[in-house]
Image (cartoon, rainbow, N blue to C red):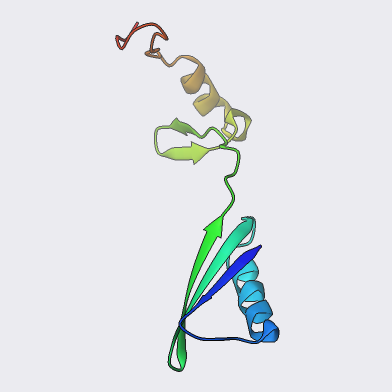
Amino acid sequence: MKVNVIGGTMTSREIDEYIKYGQEKYKGRQICRLDVTVDGDFVDLKFYFKDTNFQHAYRSTDYLVNKVDKLNSAKQSEFLDKNYNWVSENSNELN
């Protein structure tokens, strides 16, 4: 992980504590860079994250889930009966 300290200096122990703080706050996300801006007795932290694989989210009425099998049988049926508008790869028109 790359760490930039701007406007002052810090010990490696202080930097390690800010990294630990970011990892606890943003669990599940991988931090690739940290900018620490020193402003007197205060610091501003800016965390940058690695891109993650996008997981498709399905929406059925008011429910937002990442897998259709998490829905009850009525919602699964509703989802399967849904009409889709597909975008053609060769044009900007809807099929």
